[in-house]
Length: 285
Image 1 (cartoon, one colour):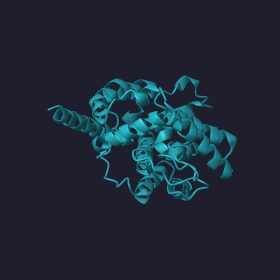
Image 2 (cartoon, helix red, strand yellow):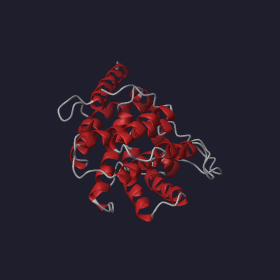
Image 3 (tube, helix red, strand yellow):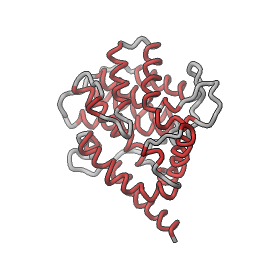
Image 4 (cartoon, helix red, strand yellow):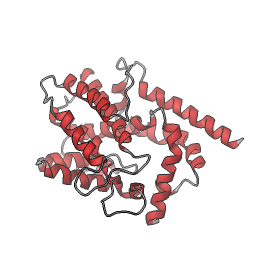
């Protein structure tokens, strides 16, 4: 089973991701992970270009770090399982960049003083892809690499039309599916996931007020309690089938041992779902 990692601490997550990366590619660039984590810290703390520090309270920097930790572990597990096709070092790198940047669409420009970045919930995937293109272009990444990162980010949209994403090859598709799997698992397995659901509702409510969006996933909840009441179904009827079918059961590479051992992330999520049910039950009494 995985050792506890403080996901509020970028350095702690960086150490684990570095270990996963070099575990797959022992001759890999030891400067890569520290470098891209440095970029992400700059972006989310208001030290990149004309962007403020992140002020969304659910989709904060820790949220991205939770997904990044999970993705590093998942790709390492896939390598140990000898899955085919074999992952290239470059696509591993692009996947880590993609998960670190996948929610940069919540960042606001310095002159954007109204509300929080949560108001961009309905458009944040597109904004994140555009942000990644800007940053990686400045870092002199090749156009094909930038497109790969954008395609991976596009996978994370709750209503993403996966078959319409212009993946350039099978491995890029695999990493995109792994990235989105890690995005779901990382947040839902977090110890404080039940505590943060009312905060998530607040983000949805702000987005709906901001642009009057009728995007169903943003506008369908009437209250924090309503969102919590519907979270178990979200897991069993939406996320779990999506992980199994759309993303090819990538989460199974986190089974320890592979293929039939327990899955720490799934177990944590199931525990959280039971905690959510208990809280909803108490609220109804």
